Length: 395
Image (tube, rainbow, N blue to C red):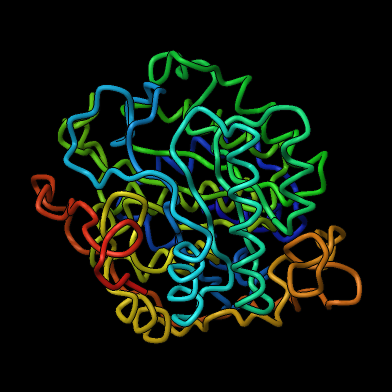
């Protein structure tokens, strides 16, 4: 396909595709899927080789959020039967983080429900960051606390945070249909505050909420304009008890096309396969590793993921390798901000060594499985272990 040849050439040059080209990727047929994966895989391998970065979530405070985000099981009015607890103590959070690091995670993501942190909350999280870094040498820490107020990003940076996550989630045009208690512009402003403070920006999207192809392309282009270092791609987990519980719009094939589109638009950025991969990609998860270079290990905030050992086996069986703590994630031309292991901004910096471009040839890709005729609602499992419980975490 001339389209894919053009997109590969642009990706290897770090050149932005047109909106029409991005839309065309989403419009490809299932018969063309392997060609799409192979093409986007060439771009992925050019900038990230066969490395897969592991990230581990610690839910510091679960449930009872005053915001009305329709996709979220922790939202105002949610009747999803999730774990609900207030702030973990720093030693509890550090213990939870250690399980992920022991499982191979290079980055720990500290998340708390709510509109945004109070200054007291920032103090709590700062103590937690210090405890985690004291006990886990070289680990990167990303905070995800909602909308930031003036000065809070600087305080998190001073406490040792390497990155800040705040997703755009969907296009600006449809944002009001998903959330009414804050705006798309509020989210953009928080990402920009994090960047201004010297934190590595992490911002992504949620697919499968009933959005159009144009909406998906719009939000990814908005992300490209923000230029975060990491772009998590979530696939909606339709929790019972939330407004989007009936939104089962994704097939494994569509998920792969979305990931490929994101890779073409963000060729040299850490693209992370995030929530919902087990529910929607299912047995085709290994194919996604040819498109993304980062995943979450184990469980998510309020839902369970597949076993950590299964994640590691999947990576090895697909011919990829876990990225070590002493390896810079981003390619050298993006690594000006420093890196976590060196005590500077996360994601790599001068003196740490950039990623070496890999060859474009790789392992053969398996043929796609037939899409199931009905959604696998049985795969949505509420988290009952790890942070906030007395049970061992999944890592």
